[in-house]
Structure formats: structure tokens, C-alpha cells
Length: 188
Image 1 (cartoon, one colour):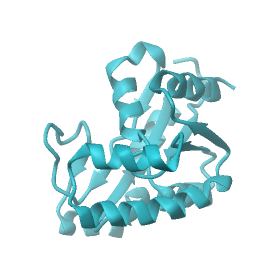
Image 2: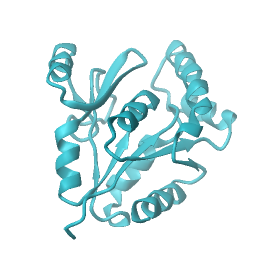
Image 3: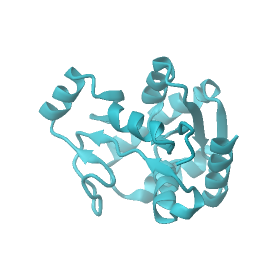
Image 4: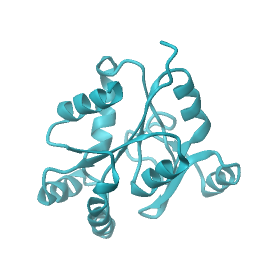
């Protein structure tokens, strides 16, 4: 690459706001952000329909996740909706050292851990256009039962209240606009 260190951007926001949609767009259209590495989080939850191990997530058992924690293998990790998620520390460091920009799609707990680590990340909060739109998106997924959706909505209220902790807030009205804003932040 250019001999520069890559930029680390953290994309966070409530469930249903469209973080995964933005990441999927970047994966499908890599020319929109050349040199970007999309971090693949580890998780203890089961794969959803169409998810591929190592592409969408690295699916680990609870024992495997515990072992990774004991080795300090995660830059950040968090419990969310009854499952654990973590970002592999060494892979992020390798990509940044190689000059590639890195985008982490993580929750509020993880974003706070990355900020506290001192790694020098830019934290971006992805906000919904409205509360009603967030509820519509969550219900429209059709992947979770009512209890899980209620927990996600309660958690979303907490996350929305914390958006001032982030360096930038982007409202997700249209995926292309979000991608353009993220690319501009990486180049600034």
C-alpha cells in the first residue's frame, strides 16, 4: 500500500439501524472504498440463514470464546441479546499496519472498549431516521421472536441516548449516503 497506517473506524448503533446492510454493501461493491478491510467478528450465536462462517462471522462455541478471552485475543468483546461478540485483535493490527483501513461493526459496549484501548479509532454512530423507522426495520427482519425484539428495542433506547459519545453521527436514510460519509471520514 502507500506506507501509511490504515484508519480504524468503528460503526455502531442500535439493532435494526442498518449496520449490516452498510457492511454488506461495502462487501458487494469494494471499489467504493478501495483498501478497506471489513473485520469479521466472532460470535457465540448460531448462524442465521445465508450466513457463512468466516465471512459474516466466525462462529465459536462458548468454550472457544472463553479460551480466546483468556488469551486476550479480542480488541473488544461484549454480551448482546444473550450471545457474545468479539473483534480479533491481531487481525485488526495486521491490517492497519499494512495500510488498509479497517471498519468494525460493533455495539456500544464494544465501541467504548475500543475507545478505552487507546488504539486511535474514529467512532461513528449510525442513527435511524426516526424511532418508528427503527421499529419497522426490526420487525421487518422476521428473524427473532417478540421477546428478543423487545430486548433489542430496550437496548436501542440506551444506545440512542449514548450517541454523543461518538466522534460522528450519520443518519441512515440511504445506504449510499452512509457509505460516502464513511469514505470521507477515512480520507479526512
